Length: 72
Image 1 (tube, one colour):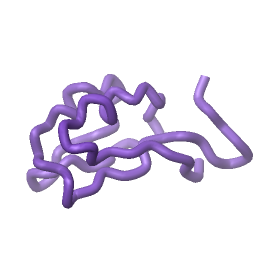
Image 2: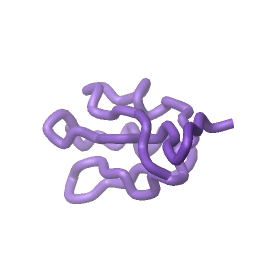
Image 3: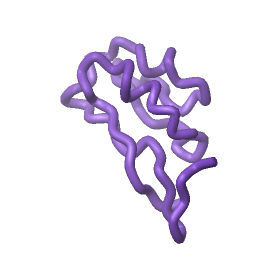
């Protein structure tokens, strides 16, 4: 069950482009197709589909991805 407080929930919050090296590991590790590659960098495509599994955060070799509270 996703964490929900008021109108916020924990989701993928940010992919820092200055840290992303475009390796695509996060895209491969995301089971919900939340992350896509755009112009050689990972971007959040479907934030609402994030299930807080932390696979992208754990697998990213550059610690470029963070999860946090976002508006629903």
